Amino acid sequence: MTFAQALSDYGYAAVLVGTLLEGESILLLAGFAAHMGYLSLPLVLVCAFCGGTLGDQIAFFVGRRYGRLLLARWPSLARHRRRITRLIFRHQIPLILGIRFLYGMRIAGPILIGSSRVPPLRFAAFNMLGAAIWAAAIGGAGYLFGRTLEVFFADAKSYEQAAFLVLIGAVLLFAAGRWLYGRWHA
Image 1 (cartoon, one colour):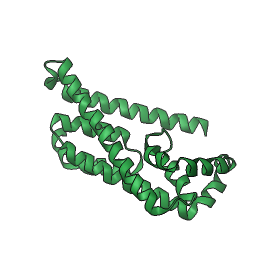
Image 2 (cartoon, one colour):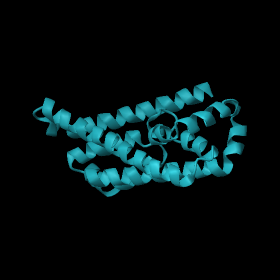
Image 3 (tube, one colour):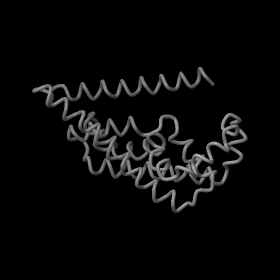
Image 4 (cartoon, one colour):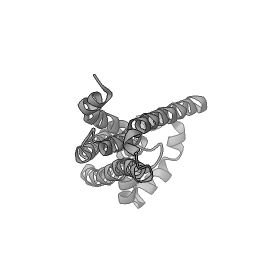
């Protein structure tokens, strides 16, 4: 199986699964792969929207059901609970829309919002809007990266696969660095 065939066969599933949790890096790569012609950009965006929405909805309901237990487990969050709850109620809509853009808050944010008793329908509506904005922005950035390479390098087609592999390497290096940093500070 070639690289192109594997990407075409499993790319959409990877985007869906990857965006359930974090997803920025996989979505950037999928946008770039769409530019290269391996994937369809509209399908990438739909998969990212579905994965991002579903992941945040699950985290919201985990927070709604187990929020107090989770806050008790992490005392640093529990110390700031009143301030966080006040912030959630004061800026509910912008927070729900933008939580997925805040580094380190992709999973914790919906859990905290769920534990604050924000109405589920309100969260669902603004979560879907935020997921649509996020998918278009991040997936579009990956696609535009490919277009930019094409503009700056006349013979970019011959370098696209190498650039894609370098991009994958950079993302993996960044993810490993984040993981090591988190383990070191834990």
